[in-house]
Image (cartoon, rainbow, N blue to C red; front, side, top):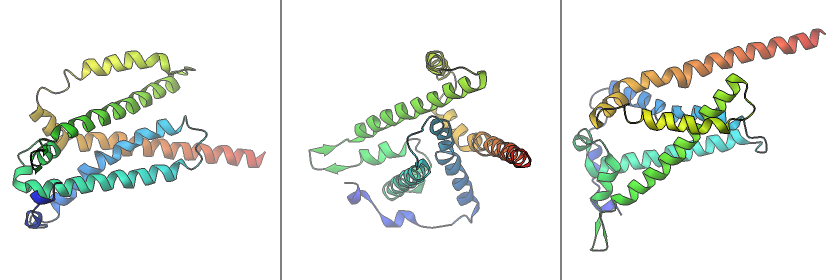
Length: 209
């Protein structure tokens, strides 16, 4: 439905400002949203019946990445780079330009509904991961009783984390990629190396015995 609003010339010029903006955008896309999939490591630890969860994870990652790529290209073709640089929420604005007669207009409400559903699912997975992690650190048998206080803390923190949309956008563009990479790459990598060393040491002790 957005095809009548698209213009292929809005994709040009490609690499007009050398590779630096491209690499910065790739790093930003890696941390958000792809790097955030590290949270599923806490979900997979509670899954015992699904044997091939790695394949499911990779297929889902490629499907999600494809959808995000298509949506990004659509926004560029409809809005253009100059408009995108001035707009905070691209998809609602792109969808609002759809005009197919008097029946299909102002469809950005559908985007808002999709955003609400996705945010609810994402928040639920993050809360589950946090509760599961807290229960493992403190040796609790069940994580469910932690869900309510964690949810209330998240709800209260959401009111003070950003003062405005501009501050949120500045944080997401300039600070969050470097902040998140510590939790998404460095700390998991350190934990993985330590776990591998302990696993090899324990297996070597078993062999010697």
